[in-house]
Structure formats: C-alpha cells, structure tokens
Image (tube, rainbow, N blue to C red):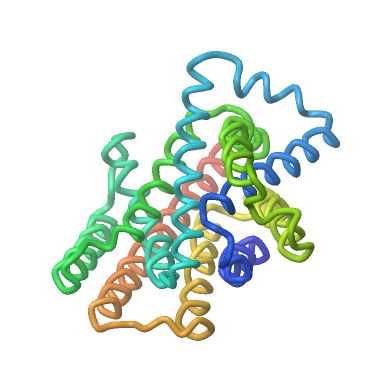
Length: 294
C-alpha cells in the first residue's frame, strides 16, 4: 500500500518530464498504453474472457462507460494541473476525496453518518467556501478531481468483476477515442511519439505507471483492513503537496493554507471516527465468534 501511494503521490515528477506534450495527447497515450499493459496481464492470467462479463449487456456497458468517463476526466485534470503549475490544487482535491465519498454515500446510498463525520464534512465545506470567497473563484480543479474520483468509486460498486478486469474494460472503452485523437494529432507529421526516443519511451511507460500502483493496491486491499487502507491513502496527496511546494516551488497563499488546515482537521476527525468504527466492528465480531457454539 505504501508502494502504491508513493507512486501515485510522486507521479507529478513523471508528468513534469512530459510538460511539452499537450494534455489531451498525453491522456490518449496513457489510455492506449494502459490497455496494452492491463490486457497483457489478463492474458497471462488467462482471464481475458472476463471482459465479456464486464461488457456483457447494455447496462454493464453503460456503467463501464460512465466509470471510464469519470476516471479519464480525473486523469486529464491531474495532468493539466501538473503542466499548468497547479499541483497544490490537485493535492487539495485528493485530500477532499474521502469526504466527498462520504457525502456521496449519504446522498446516493443512504448511508448514515456519525456526528463526527458530519463535522468533518462541514469543515470541508467551510474550507471550500472561504477559499472561493477569498480567491474570488471556486477551486474548480480541486472540486472536480474530488467529485470525479468520488463518482468513479461510487459507480464501481455496481460492477461485480474484479478491479483489474473492470479497469481493463474502462480503458478498452476509451481506447478508440484515444487512438482516434492520436491519429488526428499525428496526421501530417504532428504529434510527439516517434520523433524523440526519450519522450516516446516515457509515453509508453505511462501504461506501467498506471498499472503498477493498482496491482499493489489490489494486493494490499486483500491483506489489511479498510481503516488502514484509508489512512495510508493520505500519502498520495501529501506527496503531491510536497512535490508542489518543495520541488516545484508553487506559491501558497493565506486562503489556501487555511483551506488545507481545515481539510487536515476534517480528515483527522474522519480518520478517528473510522478507526473507532473499525475497532467496534472487530469487538462485535469477536463477541459473536465467542458466543457461537462449537
């Protein structure tokens, strides 16, 4: 899990190397090369047939297509934020994601929140409000990154296939668009791929960079509890924040500092509540097991 979050959190360093590649072209390459890697992994596992299950009917196709649109929008905004010098905003978006996910669970899945969780959501709302009023514009990159990732997670609950199969199905749906865009930009000698060996290799590596952390995350999810997974995921935006402020030298104004402070406080409260719920669940399971007759 630490490996997965470290790769995600330090990925701005990779995208900075490709700052001369237009975001849509880079997104198209990431999509196509991800399909190559994911399909190759499924082929080695002899599980390519699972794609027929993931895309077996119109409802499944619609769900996969919506998930694909959400994750591609998230990828594009992240790439755009790195290339335009707004990694601070992307980090804030990924910090906000757990709280957005909690709110979506309440609104869509009718999940019940504990009072401390409502407090955490309220603090996040205050953070976004003061940032909007202070800067005169809403932090759209942060909000859309958090919302698209939240909706992506929500719709994934509707899929019954495994993580690797579902992601392969998503990039399979997106790849015709990606290939079409690459054909468009390369028409007449444009495009980056093939003109520079170093850049071409980096573009092809985007498939590995997408697949490797997902494989590590999937392995971790089978071995550690959800509370630990949730806490360790904060490594991703923390490392992004480090890249933005320390390595890239992006400025931090007072309103952003206040917003980060409120979000960090909200996440501390949310994490405390999640850990308490996890401990209570474990105690309940132990009591139930102890009371079960042999």
